[in-house]
Length: 160
Image (cartoon, rainbow, N blue to C red):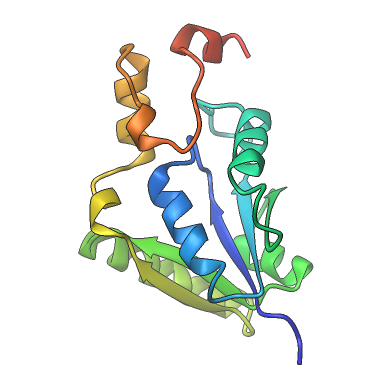
């Protein structure tokens, strides 16, 4: 029997408590969860990828079935490359479902072996989004309750 490997893809800019919740629940369903940080050279990131890799690795240090990797290109191709047959996604609301459903169909077209598994976000995290956190953080407000690690001050982040 082969391992059930799931990829949890995203830009994770930044990685939130909502993301952490999906990974912690997903690691109980799959033999391995790979947090795949997609890199798009056309997009300016708020948090450097190197910082996110470091912070996410620290958060999941106690769990031997969670790891972080970065990738460029199509998620479905990356999943194939690392032997993942499952795509793990969190849904906060019906808008997320509509968007994620379209992506799941496209991924399945690219990689016939790839099944998408949706987990409903835990209620206490349903309102959290990376863009909301970026806006709050940019204006110097505390974002500690939204993140499973400490984010450097905006000025420090911009100088990384």
